[in-house]
Image 1 (cartoon, rainbow, N blue to C red):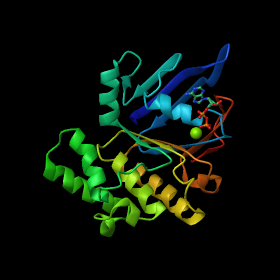
Image 2: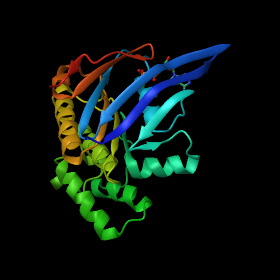
Image 3: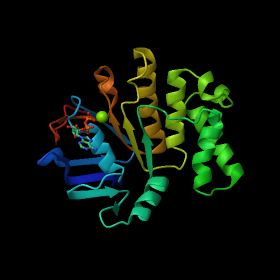
Image 4: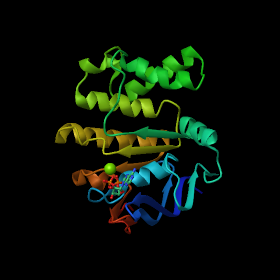
Length: 231
Ligand code: ADP
Ligand code: MG
């Protein structure tokens, strides 16, 4: 049986909105098995980023369960959630937020340094991941010496540094041209298979959905049944 690495069960999230509450997620359920990628599409404001924030344990839902790698997150303390994020969850936002003064390989090493792993092991893993995202010869470049697509690849490699079970990616191609965007999406599909992550990808790039294992649509905080389901 496949290990299910991410489970959202009947999750509702509201935000304060004037006198009342705005429902950002409305009884959303989603199961993402290890080694598969689920794409989430839907209009702006439909709740896609909220879905990722809840899955990342950055925002606690009003109702429902979030289970990461078999662990119920509802009862965890703030510190326990931070540790869970550091060790089990990789997050890739739209903007890479790389540190300007660090080389590509250093951006990755910083991540693992925070988790207290041995320097040599960290350096080898950082190099290996940069190779996996096609940046072997760019490891010693700083962000301003990289293209937008290359920076996003560093961002993705960094998110994988601590070997997460769950990979959450929010519109990674919105700042890229079509061709670079397509190759970043391809890379995410490949990494998901190779690394066995349960990946959720929010994307507006509907041209490449046939490469995903599954696509779901958000509208007004509700998740619709799959529009595509790979055989
Ligand atoms: P998407 O990523 O699909 O554009 P979001 O999840 O960012 O959608 O937003 C869903 C809804 O929740 C929107 O109406 C948005 O304005 C609202 N929203 C998002 N974040 C907050 C917040 N921190 N406080 C209040 N409302 C928010
Ligand atoms: Mg968003």
